[in-house]
Length: 403
Image (cartoon, rainbow, N blue to C red; front, side, top):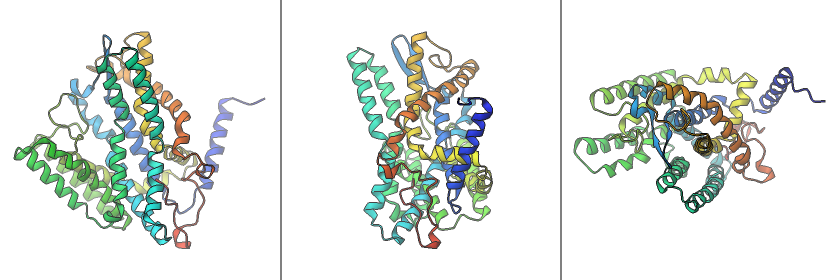
């Protein structure tokens, strides 16, 4: 008879964690994986905390607690972690490309391997939401509701498109200084906000803004950010610049978009979002040694490894998990923290109580669709995080398909 006691379960978890720990190559920098996991989970929690779907009759529309409670802006400082993801992405991609070149792997093969892993889970998301959208249209649902749901469900795709473009340009970016894209962002904002240029010019920053942390990742690969002094300069300089822009230049305090606001720091990225990202990157670099120490614990490392194996699945499906919970909850009426206006502390407390439910629904999505991220072939099912392979200085390169 199977022992299902808590002690037996905990023992099984520790045993599995030790196996994952033992299978991980000694030379692997576990801090990189930890930072990626933190970045992905930060985005997920941030969206769940600042995105509300308010039920108004038969219509669902988006709202944000940041609209009604601006004092909650620091929440966006904690959970808007995209800059860290681009920092890690730039570091891993430039290192991976260098290893691929050393092994004589053509650029097109290297790029295909990375993009397949990046976009493989997208097909399932698009297929599901095509069916859902058609069903809602045929059932006579309000068009405004359908538009709201589809926009939220597909919103993660902008990130993948930008990340894919930067990945494709990696060979051109390996030596690019972050100061160049930072200068572009600065000039675009001066033209937009200081000289009255059209707002459409701001979309130049969609590439330039995320190029800054991505090229910082390339500098990390080149060994230019190993000294703690670099991390402190980025952290303190980015913090001071962001504070000056918010307090003195009128930039929004929130680092995410707020419905109804005249200016969004994120859509497209502004100079304040970029300087804030520099501060985040500096903090990430300063935490590397502590993270390496923490990741020596098998259970902590196993959790990080599992998140990394399904990072894109978690990222793509977290908004769907929110909407599935919201739609199902409507069968019980307007529930606090799920369908009500996010206009007070009561909503915040109720939303915090819903987080375990959202995590459970996301876990169901993960179980259903995680295989899409691994490509489908038997050779793709082995863990890229814990795959055994020799370090580069022994004559072999790191797995170039690792994301």
